[in-house]
View: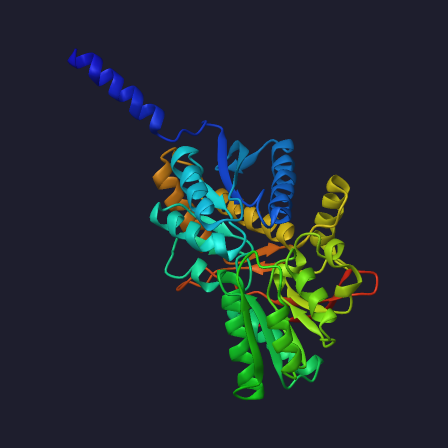
Length: 388
């Protein structure tokens, strides 16, 4: 009886332990395939599938002289913080992934990053710009610039390009990404133009669709520019309502404008506006153009910044795996080794720019930003580059 009980226990423990096929490397993707921003999840998965096929068609990933097939496991975080947290835990504890790519938006990346760090599993957040995603989390990495750089970049551009002396801001106070970026923009704009130069600092809550009260205040404020650090599905509502209420000044956006079908939703109302982002597809060259051409051929549309950053983030993680020399087969040891390998990358040449991580502090790359103008054809045209 005792022996039978022990055998049963060993079987249960064996089933509970994350398994990895000897010739397979598993990465998890914590992305929003449903919810408010499904286009972000679709772009992430498209780029990942393209990368997986490229690697596996070439015979796999060479690590220490051995070829490994790559397997990508996708978990839908539904664009919700709590779902991103549970998705992270599932990928790490049940699916047994070596590392995790995503979440993309900061509202999901911040809580998921806490789980990844607690479970000592390397996580790459390609698109999350909120500083809290990586702060005091040695296992969490970022693939893009920070809001503390993006906010001042937008403030400086508004001042120089539009000769703006007064600015208004409208943002979702319940979401980490727009809240942090709105505050960074305000601080930077008032540093340039003086205290009180942000004459309207208006808020709303996720899922709101009527911004008339806030936009009435903005229209009356005398602002020369309106900064809207919101997602592609929210921007059209705001821009259209602003125009209907008599606000005809420039509307400046953030990197979240570049994902999804912004122009399909916004149309002519968004033309002529600018936003800060990570790369511009129009006029791209070299590896960036090769990526764009292949993606467009496969998916019949131009890749957005989420797709490009996912490509870079996943590639960086895979390059770090190759630099480990060999896999031990012990998941805890291999995750630790991968974290050290990612942190030790001196220069990764990505399609959205070069990446490397400082020897101390958070794993945030120093990267340039791109200012994009939405031209008369509704295309995202490169306008200028801004570097730290």
